[in-house]
Amino acid sequence: MLQSISVKRDAERRQRAEEGCRALPEYDYVVVGGGSSGCVLAARLSEDESVSVLLLERGGHEPEEARVPGYAVFNINSAMAESLKAEPEPHNCNATGCVLNVPTVLGGGSTINGMLYVRGSGEDYDEWARLTGDRGWAFNNVLRYFKKSEDNLDSPINRDMRYHGRGGPQKVSWQPYRHPVMPLLAQALEAAGVRPRLDINAEAQLGYSVVQTTSAGGRRWTTFNSYIEPVLRRRNLHVETFATARKVVLQNAARGKLKAVGVEFEDAAGTVHVVRARREVVLTAGAIHTPQLLMLSGIGPAGQLKALGIPVLKDLPVGEELLDHADVVGVPYKCEPPLCTTDWQSRLADLRQYRQNRTGPLSALNVLHLNVFARSSLAEPGTGLAPDLQIMFLARTVDEYETCLPYDSWRINRVIPLVSLMRPYSVGWLRLNASNPRGLPLVKLNYFGDPAGHDLAVTVEALRMGLRLRDALAPLGLTLDTSSFTQCAAEGAVDSDAFLRCVARTRTSTSWHWSGTCRMGRARDPRAVLDSRLRVRGVASLRVADASAMPFIPSGNTNNPTIMLAERAADIIKRDRKALCPWC
Ligand SMILES: Cc1cc2nc3c(=O)[nH]c(=O)nc-3n(C[C@H](O)[C@H](O)[C@H](O)COP(=O)(O)OP(=O)(O)OC[C@H]3O[C@@H](n4cnc5c(N)ncnc54)[C@H](O)[C@@H]3O)c2cc1C
Image (cartoon, rainbow, N blue to C red; front, side, top):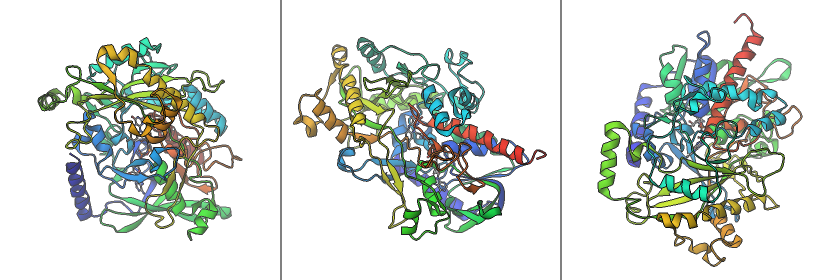
């Protein structure tokens, strides 16, 4: 499977190289990065037939198998992502540095992610409004962009028109298959006092729920499938794949102000081109590559750029903050037949069933869509009902098939609470790599790095919640399995603080929710790279409209918030253009 993805990608790249670059020398808007946000931007901007839009994407199209929900884990480790090893730190990721799987494919994160459709809490966006001084980012205002993007297919959720939209580009639905373990987990959660919630994307999130996904009819719906594919025939929209931006071309304009006038990029054959942007360059290369591109263009922390010999055009705190939710893989529960079966006959039957009508275990991401959102005893007062922790349930097959199917997880025999810190105090950073500034940047995640130990304490509490399910799960056939936790065994009992702190330190992983590396903020905010209209401070015609712009990480998974941000960005850009040119 992994090999087939990489073979298809290589063939597509070769073909693109033979065909040559088809981009024109000039467009009104050049959008860099065709991921979750870039596809939204390019589709929305090109709705206006009088403007031309180029979308540059360094990857290619996703193969059909990438849309099978049960294969999602393959996507993460395939040629559709590059692996970035974060800086090793003693207090997280087993001191070896977590691996970040950075998307490199049309659709970006929406093509390789877990598809969970989560908005976060209203308080998060009210905080965005406070930090930017722009009420336009408050929840009551951004709700319309969440709804605008949405084609919610499930009744009764889609009957709630205050919170949900129908007919938007992004398909949203419950996955058609629910593993038999899910009702048992729900039963155990209720026994532990966690209440059910039908819809986490309405007035509140707290409780456990079966989360909707960006999939429909047993298939993944990426932002490329949702926003771009239906409009690919537009004559004013051009998508150039295997086109890697190298830098933004900047010029001195009126009154000495810098202005973005184009983008330098390398095509599939390795030829370097410059495309001019008549109106704006919009960076949507994600929270890892957008800050890198800005710095390669001379926009970033002056000291850092000077040390690398990059001429400083604008001194801004690019990459000085990196936000993410630290995930920790908790102690698993063993699940045995007949509840969990992993034999080849069942797998073959699954494949046949999926091929016939896209149902069965392959139409869902095992049990990941069962989520708990909760407030720990350390949740900050004054944050309303915003959760500070999330518990998801991962599942996988261990033992018998591990060597031949290392990433297989559609048939399972372990269920693992995966805890995620929603309101982290620890903040990381991103810098250019001095030995190769164009290569992968250096990233320090700094999970659990806050001096007061708040983040670790919340995580320990969340891990303990996962353990609390054991009394209710044991009679249902799911028993705790500590056999793989030998590294922490000497620390104490399985529910002791010392053991759980050791689990947090050694079993950390990214949640892939990188954000905030080019945050927006108020005019005098020394941490802000962008103003609240997503313009790079002090540079004309240049915006950032991806997860990098978030000033505060939402309490939930970040794909849908990024789509919302891009929807509003498109509206802002259209309005700014009208304001400058009312007759256009
Ligand atoms: C493995 C994984 C699992 C996740 N699970 C979930 C989930 O279940 N639910 C959820 O809500 N969120 C999830 N997320 C997070 C979510 O997908 C991201 O927050 C979101 O995709 C970020 O969107 P973006 O537009 O900022 O960046 P991306 O979607 O990463 O898009 C950036 C795009 O830019 C391209 N690019 C980069 N550099 C260049 C360049 N120099 N030139 C041209 N193109 C370039 C990349 O190839 C990519 O396509 C997950 C993410 C990952 C990676």
